[in-house]
Length: 228
Image (tube, rainbow, N blue to C red; front, side):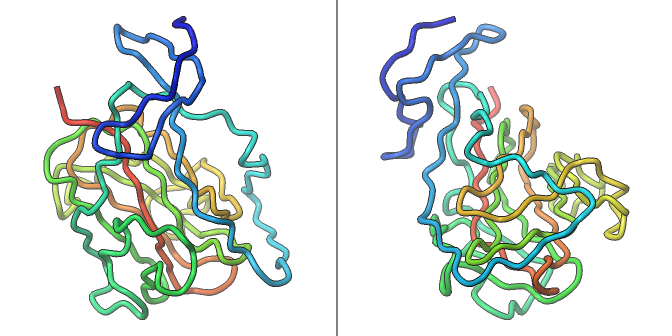
């Protein structure tokens, strides 16, 4: 265990830090530090709607310990090209998914049509990925249906990709029955452990929400580093 130290800036990400004042650890010869996200302002308005799903995570998000990752990991997705399953989004454009705007209000998200949809980020090169952090729409309380996060080196995912997260509990989206839990959207996003997966492409699938059938993507951050 290494002694606690000052905040460590993520490479290439001014103003973003991991582990301010927190202890670092060593694993397999690498210094591991906790990820601390730069969060947008909470935007939820109106009367919360009751959400009843059989597979909900009710853990307060602020109580979840930060994910550890190797020192030097940073947001590989910032400004990277994005494609989507819907060629004609209802609102916005796919590039908004990696533009750094996580505000969760009009002008901050792309809205794809109803049913099964996805957005896909091209990281440019094969990378070692430790976390995928999506923000969908946090302007009101809702849970997103059938969130499935895949990674691959094939832009068409003909290999099916490697599934990092799947809360499609009844296989309604065809990825198999997932064991991960749904959650209520907040400005904190959702940190998904990618466990060092090597890939070039990251795809996030959804199928509407507890509010409606539309699919809104505000931002997706992908933390990792180039393959050594």
